Length: 122
Length: 122
Image (cartoon, each protein chain N blue to C red):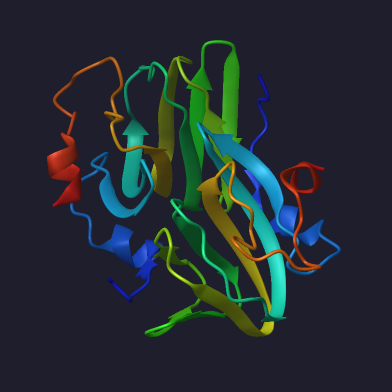
């Protein structure tokens, strides 16, 4: 049993690439991931899978088809299953995510930013 | 659809009672909860259910049968299914938890601190 906690911000500091989530913990069938993001991601949805965003540093806007949610540090927002969304950060933003282990972060859209689960576990 | 994020620390500030988790978000079959704790909880285990601890403020020790894990702000630790544990905080500590919606926070032990899911949703 791994007896060491993981510090979320330290885990983000270890990331070289933007928009490339890294798995830091598993709770049952869900992964906790961290990511550093800046700019605009891509419009997508996750069918049958909710996705939780927690902002660690900076600010994130989550564009939705019927509006927009603005998150700052310590703010949590869950994008429900099937809801199309597009994360946007004007400045660099550090995030934690909680989502089913099977969720592809670009959802139903595959782009050059899509990372497989195997890549996210490295 | 609820378009407002929840701030984890503000949610903790709204709690009157120690060791009484409050549900702030749901991701699929999992709840995200916040709690304020101080002192020693109770030795217990959750069969078939992992439990994630994230420290928001303060320090938490999680006693395990074969050792102890010390968490500070931003630290995440998952107590695996079936592992007996006892959270201890010398000073007040603010926590977020991620666990299956069906998890009772005192696990296999029912004490005067046990709160039903209905109480945690209020």
